[in-house]
Length: 262
Image (cartoon, rainbow, N blue to C red; front, side, top):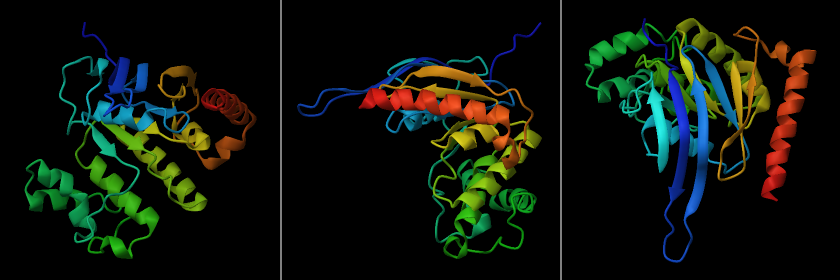
């Protein structure tokens, strides 16, 4: 019988940056524990500066933990850099590349032939709401369209785990809500696992199967909330009594952590 492992398991992850000159060391993370099952969407919320983005950098392989382990499919020594998809807060589109050129950048870096990469991207542009914009340059795209291109680029590699660092934080409320619903549907269809960092409690409730609340720096997980409702969900879900109560509890937990900073 084959053992079943979560897609991602973070165990006791601590991160400390050394002090420079006479500054003391900076303790950013303190024994973080969390996991993401196969096909599960997990969100991480917490006060500003509590180490959420640092944790994503560690999971992605861009940084290493000071101590603790990060396992992919049960393997603590698995290579993570390039294996885990990562979408940052900014879209990071190259202004001299059009939509298709930006979308296939990751595949080209991995050595996929340009023609093959572009053919794969063309097969998905409609699904990502980009049909007719393949030759458009970033300067002529709206914020929402730019984020769709960045998401297409992140998901073209077929990675089973995608990290999302506040991908819709800079968008207006209407565009943000529309993209949240769209992304929720895409990830359910693809059976992708996702770990989202967000300051938006509504976003976490709309998209997640599980939400972790982090403490003030040095960050650690202090509360786990499981959302037992089918995905994808619509914005209307957020005003149901059950979700209003969940939001109230999460906001109270966050307020407690913020008070700890003061």
